[in-house]
Length: 359
Image 1 (spheres, helix red, strand yellow):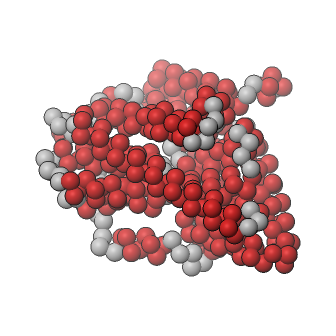
Image 2 (cartoon, helix red, strand yellow; image 1 turned 90 degrees about the vertical axis):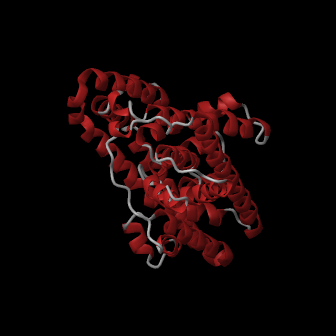
């Protein structure tokens, strides 16, 4: 047992990921029987999301100590989120335009599902839904965006209260430390959860299920890879001036968990841990920026919305104008902000973007 814990967590996770794919490939559909292990792991991770965001974000905002510094960190973070989101969605549009994944696809080979129809009040409801009318209900429903807004306001209130707010700040700082310890316990389950999830995916889907959409899937992964290797690596090298390899080595655990769970919220505990322990990011900045970014900085979703919209237009023979392209870029960025950080949330936003350009 001691040998197991001496092996770095990221090495155990990568080994579990590879082994899970191999076992699922060999076992086939029978691998679904162990999916419950992965479901339990994801449930534990989701259990952490609300208390971790609440305690970490409130403590992070309040411990910054100066409203001007908070504003400085906040606008820089938001600028980064908007810029990278725009780059991502335009990259998706570029890949879709150059590679034309929807041209020549035999639609009879596709199993058509149902995508929710966007209503006229969807955007109004989404904006209103950002307002935390009942913090308790928001937490019970795991409604992350209103939770973030409430946590930000509470943190700012503690900050403005100065000395009178210090006792409350200590409660949230202690709660944040406790949640980090709970996270460390749950993270030890990661290799088992990743193994089960990857075995299930490889065993039940395989390659045949993706044959009809092979080029779209390939371009989606290619786009994500380009964002990581060019956009992120470029910012790390030339803006942050950090060693790129050391940076990515430091976030290996977060990469492995995000790939296996396909959820930014589920990966949040690991990301915070990597930023603070491996990269030396201050706790206040990490808690504020990462908790915020887990919900409103989903560049993979933005890129996919651009790519998938072009795929749909090509598939059904819809001609798009430059105005449509700019509409996709705008709605793709906003859609990535509005989508919940859980697997499949982008489908709802895809329906909105599709409807806006007549696909």
